Image (cartoon, rainbow, N blue to C red; front, side):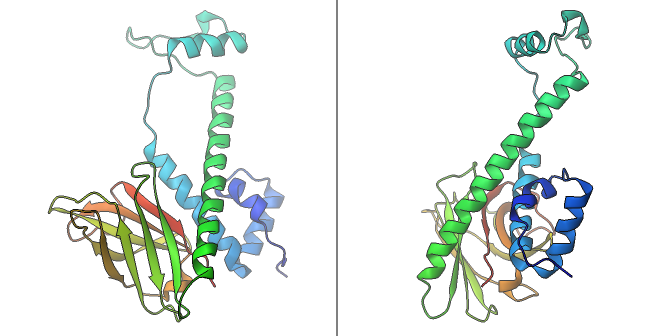
Length: 241
């Protein structure tokens, strides 16, 4: 029997695959019967997947290397040069430090973003006219001033996406809306914006729009892509009624 209590506090670690076996089993058994927790998990996975794509390999500054080595009591001889360049290899102990820092940053960003999206969606849905649902799309770090809304009819069969302050694209590029359900992404719309960055388009999807848990928008070649390939400019959760 599936526990009727939510497992929201376990979802960040579950999305990162860092739960103990017993807790991971608890979450996996709970998710099939709880749309709220599935929606939250999808949102965490979207954030984590985009963070993974934004990483750039860089060499740490010499001062940071020395500080870490001093704190971890690692002698200078532990560093290994690479073809004459001042690159260094991370020992297992340093790797554990960096892994912990990265995990904390991911969790902080994910939790903060999800709570913000939930609060905005609650405010928008409270004022929805005629039974329609309005879900906020928030600009990512690339375009923090951009924003949008996914408007869905009361029955979930019809919808539209409206965006503002997105930069106009070249003729060979378009914005593409993606809808997420059970970890799978489906294209929902292709659109362009005017010189003021404003645009809108009807949304279509194979399933009821209210069954999707999150939405995102990327920059894709004209005609759209089978899967996201460009930068994510908008993202948001769809809190199911």
